[in-house]
Structure formats: structure tokens, C-alpha cells
Image (cartoon, rainbow over all chains, first blue to last red; front, top):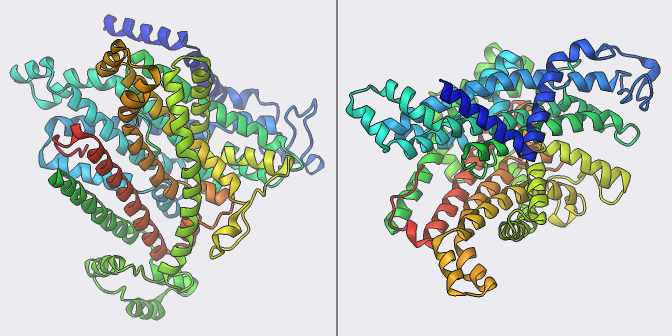
Length: 287
Length: 319
């Protein structure tokens, strides 16, 4: 256990010693902290409408101006990532867990089941993400109770492939053969021999999945299929601000910067994490 | 080698068949059908039954699936539940528009990505590499609707150089899309260039460290000759698969970009069809996109196999 702990300390140090990793991890941590603390520190009520100050320019009272309903942009931007971060932060570990375990199992077991299930994986991957997500959302709505399992399911499918390939990389190693020879069952081999050795690849993949999920979540909100008003959400705020871009660019600028900084931060951190762990972060396939 | 290619082809066709069944089953599982979409509020009792009998929706699902699949093979995709028109012609125009968008993006992005990828790979950790690699992370991770919104603000509202929205109809000739197509192409090119650049860069770096390149170096082969003869032929092979993935993404994943710019392409049409619950259209578009995805990946795998002698003797890659 202590060896594991010191390894993670080493990885964390290596992550922060790279400029990209330090910037990325700081951005991510700052966003998570803001998402947790924002309800207590924002200056205004996020749904307080005011007809007297519609699309006001930035001022001392409203640092980032107001939107088309006279709501404070700073308040709404600070709170605009909460829904997205909560949903994706729950869905990402779920996706990595189920995709990872199934992928390792298939990589180890092989055979007919592996052949058939990999064809199903191919079939799922051949459809654009937005088609799959929208079909679920128009039927069941876009509540957290729908989005979390849906994202976890669809974004777990590519993880199967990654975990399966990583398992193929270690399955013929001596320690796995030794465990087999000792007569350990498959669950024990997966837990004790394979999982520790593919965990690095899965963590990097998890970081990537998180960023893809955020992209999906905010794109859906932007298109009007996600978060419903008046809940503040970056995607929704950008969509609203587009109509007033010519007269009030500030209403859109803040959520653009907020969303971009979180997603870029995750990717910088994922990149540095991959280097720190020595994982070959495969050319991320366009999802 | 012929056997390997045929095996790969069969796998691809099998995947398309599987997707078609999955799409049909998924749409079947959703509440509502073509008749509830056509009749809307009147969808109850006798009228609903008549409509279902008329469209053959009262037959068992397997029979309807086989009919649909057989029709799709003859390029007959049925009729829209929304306006009763032939889906093949509705989709055809939009597919052509999306192909135009994808074609422009590829023509611009692929040469750019290969060039920049090779340069950054050769100048690893140099100033140009650091800047371009950081830029690539930016370009490929920022959501398309964000970069689109920013570009519209800068180039269309602020500088007033190009239109920020496409206002031509779906059946307009290709020339009518200029200059409105410029910004969508730029947004898509940014993302695809970043992806391909990263692959080419890491592939060039890997090849530079290989034994045969070291050998060529030690032998005293001139630098550019070494790059052209020893590095590039090996380093560019992985780019084929990434470009294929990008093509598939260009046809299916441009949904958001088409919507932002009001571009009358397939992705835009798909969102509208899903919102309208025009299920026959959704099925048709899903099938086309899946077939394209499988098709380009198949083509890329085959091309790689043909170009890379080492893969000819290996087991067909099906991972």
C-alpha cells in the first residue's frame, strides 16, 4: 500500500512539474472548487430578473455585465458549470468502471463471446454520439437521472476497446501466467494481476472521456436539448448570447472563456498525466 | 492477402447489417411511430388503426425490418412521416451539401495537417513544435459551437468579412454556398487538423527513433533524403486511419456546426427529424452515417494493408 501511495505522489509531482500539467490541473481544480463554492460566494441571485438593466455593459455593480433578462453574468457564469460538472463527474467513473471491467474480461476470456461483443461495440461506435444521445433525450427527457446513466453507458463503450487492448498487452506476461498456474480464478486474476497493470491506461482514458462528456453535455444544452432554464449553464448561456452578440458581446464571452478553460484544462492535465504515467495516449479518436 | 481483404470486407458488411438491426430495434422501442407522428393529436382509436394498416405498421417487426433493409439496399429509404416525401431525395440533397462541406475541409485540412505534423515531429520540442502542439490541444478540445460562436463574432459581426449564417436552401447548387461555407469549413478544419497533426507528429517522432532511421543516419544519408525516403513512408501510414476517422466524424459529427451556421446538411436534418419525431428519416440517416463510418474505416484499413507489407501476413486486424 505504501509503495502504491508513494508512486501516486511521484505521479502527482511529475504532473505538476510539467508546465502543461500544472496549468491544466490548476484549471480543473479551480473549476471544481468554484462549482462547489459558487452558491455561497456569488454576488446576486442567478435567477433575479431585472427589466431596468437588460444587456447592461460591465460596471462596478455587475463586473461582467447583465444578460438579456437583466441577470448578472458573473453570477450565472460562476454557477454555469455546476450541472455539467456534477453530471459528468458521476458519469465518468461509471463509464470507465463498466467499460474497463468488461474490456478486461473480454481481453482475458477471448473466444466467441469476445468476437460477438466486439462487433456490437463497432456497431455502437459507427453511430454519431449526438444521434444516440438525442434519441434517449427526446424520449426520456434530459434530467440528471437520464443523463448520468446514458452518458455512462455510451461513453463506456469505447473504454471496452481500450481496456481490451491493454489487457492483450499484459495477458501473456509471466505474472499472469504464474497466477494461472497457481490456480487463481478469473476474477482474482483480473483484480490482482491485470487491473493494476491496465489502470494507468484507464485513468488517462477516463480523463479523455470526461472532456468528451463535458463537450457532449454543453453541446446538447447549446442546442436546447439539455439543461432547462432558468438553471445557469454555459452551453445555454452561449446559445442565448448569440442573438445579442453584436450589441452585448460580454454576455457570451464569460461562458465561452469558462467552458473553454475547463475543457482545455482537462486535456492539458490528461496529456501530462499520460506522459507522467508513461501511457501512450493514442491519437484520441474523434468521438 | 486477398483473403485478408475479403475477411475485412465481410466484417465491415456484418457491422453495417448489425447496425441496421440495432437502429431499427431502437426506433421500434421508442414510444410512438410514424402514424402518431402523422396524425399527431388525432392519433387514437380507429384512425390510428387505419393509418397503421395503410402503412403496414400492423405487421410483425421482423417482417417490417426485412422490408426496410431490402428497400435500403435498393436506395429506397421510404417516405418521411413529416411531409410524405421520398426520403431518398430529401436526404440526397443534404448529403451532397454535407459532402461539399466535408470535401472543402479535407482539401484544406489534410495537406495542412500533414505538413505541420511532419514539421513539428522533425523539430520536436523546438519553439514551433511547442506552439503548434499547444495550439492543437486548444483547437481540438474547444467545443465546435464555442469556436463557431467566437469566429462568427470576430469575422462576421466585428470585421464583417464573411456571412455568419448560411441562408440558401438545401437544393441550391454548390456555388451558392460560397462565401457562407467559409466559417463552417474553418471551424471543422481547426478540429480535424489538430487531430491529424498530433498523430503524424507522434508517428514521425517514433519513426525517427527506429533502428532503420538510425542506420540511415549513421550511414551518412543526407538529412532530407533520410526524411523523404526513410521517415515519411513509414510515419504517414497511421495518418490514413486517423483521416478515415475524421471523414466519418465530418459526415456525422458536424451536426452542431451545421446547426450553428444553419447549414442545410445531413446533421442539421437529423436534429430536425429527431425533434419532429420523423422516425423513418432518423432511421435512414442513421443507416447512412453508420455505412459511411464503416466504409471509410474499411477503406483505410485496406489501404494500410496494401501499403504496409508487414500487415499482409498478420492476422486481419479486428481490434
